[in-house]
Image 1 (cartoon, one colour):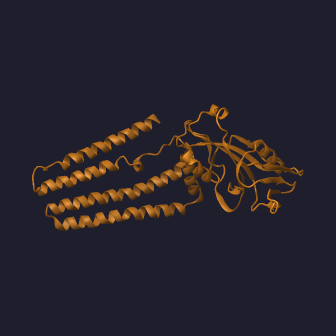
Image 2 (cartoon, helix red, strand yellow):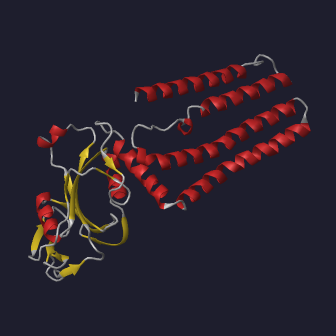
Image 3 (cartoon, one colour):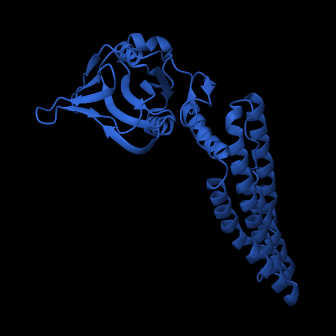
Length: 326
C-alpha cells in the first residue's frame, strides 16, 4: 500500500510540474498589447501543457492494485483499457485543436484546417469508444461479466474497511461473496416436520415451515394464512448481519446488535424469498435448514453504512419471481 501511495504521489507531482510549465508559458508576452502572433503560439502551447498536466493524475492511467483480489482483475483491466482507449483520442483532439490554432496564427491556413478536422474526429471518437466498450462488456462471456460484478462487490466491501483485505471467495453465490462466518453443509432431508416462527419488529409475520416433504411459508394473516409454495427451487438459506466497517470486533458485545436479514436462494445464488429484517437467532434457521437438506450460511458484512444497500443488492441479486415478507 505504501508503494501504491508513493506511485500516486509521484503521478500528482509529475502532473503538477507539467501544468506549472503550461501556466508559466501563459505569462509570455502579457505585458504587450496586442499580443504578437508568436506570443499567441506560446499561449496555445502553454494551454496544451496545462491540459496534459491535469490529465496525468487521472485514475485511468494508474495501474490497478494487483495485491488485493485476483478474481476481480479481469473486469478491472478491461474497463481500464476502455477508458484509456476513450480518453486518449479526447486528449489528442484537444491538443490538435490547440495546434491548429497555433498553425493558423503562423499563417498556415491549409495545414491548420487539416489538423482541426483530425482533432474533431479524435474528439468524436471518445464517446464512440466508451459506448462501444461498454456494449462489448455486456456482450462478453459470462466469466468476464461475472468478474465485473465481483470487482464491484470487492470495491464496495473494501471501501473504508479497517481490517484490510477480507477473505473473499469468487465461486460463492451469483458473483462471489466473502467467506461466511458460519457454514453448514446440506445433508439428507429429514421427513419429520419442523417450523420457525419468524419474529420481526415491523413487517409481515410469517412461519417458515418444513413439512417433511417440501419447504413452504405460512403467513400470519387470518385470511391469507395458508401455506404457500415457493416460486422456485430453494438450495440455500442465508442469514446476514451488517456491521460498520470501522468498528472493532469487540464492539459487538457492548454495542447494538447487528441487523439480521434472512433469505432463501436458488442453486445459482439468486434470491427466491426475502424475509427482510428478522429478530430470530440464526441457529434456529440453521437447524431448520439441516432438517430440510439445505445449505446454510451466515455472513457478517462489514462496509460503510452508505454502501450497505448496494453491497446487499450485489451479494444477493434477484432474478425472476421473489416472494417478499418485508
